[in-house]
Image (cartoon, rainbow, N blue to C red; front, side, top):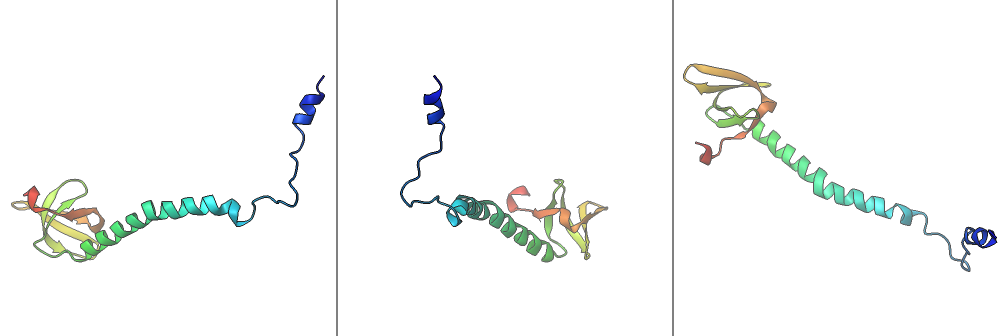
Length: 109
């Protein structure tokens, strides 16, 4: 009664001398996914971080910047870890260097 079912679940017949696709071929899809992931996500993010660091290093007094919180200001003083921004008459705010998002574009003025 169940003999047909038992034979159907038996091990697959091995071809004459053909082995499994093991070794590097088994890891090839994972390697390919990692390479695609690297070029589409990791590399552009590293490039953007490098550009942001270069922009922070080149800041000088008189530059118009915007912070990551959306505050626009004029650079008054540059220190190793902080930047002082003038946001209004007689109003100066000190920010950490990492919180400067970028230079103010001419369209924002």
